[in-house]
Length: 64
Image 1: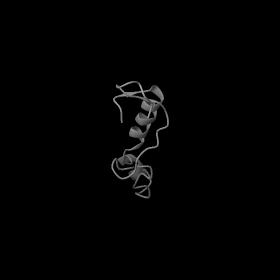
Image 2: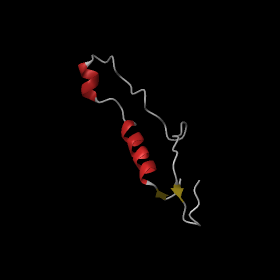
Image 3: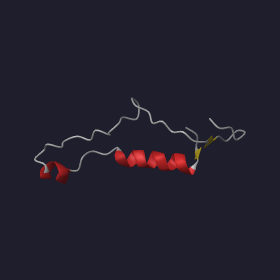
Image 4: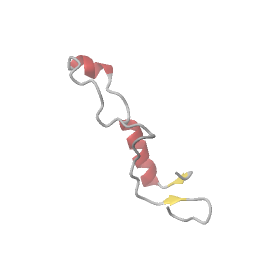
């Protein structure tokens, strides 16, 4: 991905990064370990995000 990102793409990537966390310990303790894993958790290499938006490249300002 290009170094220069638009605000919408950057916002979407940051939201996905925040959602990609494990379930907190207090949530496991509160539910007697019925909730043990995050269903939205994703690995960076196996599943990619779909980001629609303009990504500015350094050479010529083309959009990919």
